[in-house]
Image 1 (cartoon, helix red, strand yellow):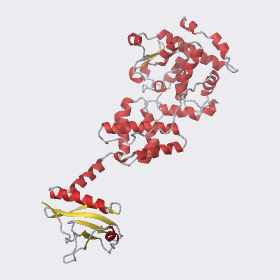
Image 2 (image 1 turned 30 degrees about the vertical axis):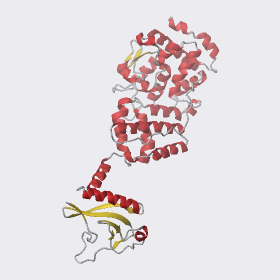
Image 3 (image 1 turned 45 degrees about the vertical axis):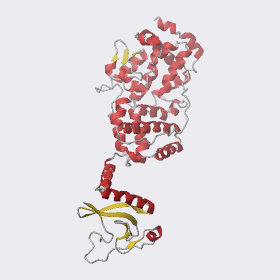
Length: 434
């Protein structure tokens, strides 16, 4: 049985014969004037059975509600005054009183709520689940999500409950990243946080996302950076002397020679290569559009792969990671380029810009867009493409052989590249008919 305890009841542990506790009319004035004693004491509310204010020797005042369950005292702490106002305390007391009269135990509800809170995942636990159960299964660049979370999100929110992160917390985090001069990184961080909390909603971990209606903090212009042939020359000729490991150097060379995506190059497996046929087949699960891509290998690409395969080991990865990972990461290669811009003598560019460079320069050499798109493995959205299963192997080989020659001739030039003479000497038709 649940009962309200009369206001004259002593605190548990009080000695027999000790005086009854004070009973006063609860007002803000009367509560403010309660004086702490040497020991903790409770002052009860006049006319409100079981409602009291507990006063500690240090002067902390908290609203409490005392009732009994089958003759056993039960205490419910309503909240600390004045953080919990007198009006709020009356409301919570009324709610608890109704539960007692209905045969329920309000303190038991609070215990359950506290247990649920203790069992709720922290942000670091959510991040681990997101990477393992979502990002790794759906994103080739999951390591970048992991890096962003580790660099900016976990240091700020690591041990906080995921369900307690607010929209204000997200905005403050992004503002901090912008303030340190990384506005684009702030956009990337928001994208990862949004995916992580949407994952949590899908798994019924949280009820709503703190990223709701949070806008990217900075505007990004469309990417238009590409290297001139003189910059291609500097990049190619200075790469060998750059303070990078051989695997990273060769990955960057293969990247510009084949014009495939960085994740596809660094994730290259020996099983994907047919060196006799001089081809590389990227399986569908590793391409952006989900279609397998046949990549003919130029003589320059073959030379790089031959050298790299001699050092790759037996893991099956052509570009194994330096710290035991399956292969080099996008982030590691991108940082390697960013750190060595002065060495290359080239203004800021990224590995992805090498892919744009090839397409742009080949356009200037009159290579049709259709053939360039086949090399880049861009999705063809035309109706006819649905029925087109031709691999365009000859056309792709012509494009990549021609592009390799453009790079090599540019690199061999002692003077600035004579672009006009190069365009006169190198004709796409010659490579198609070879």
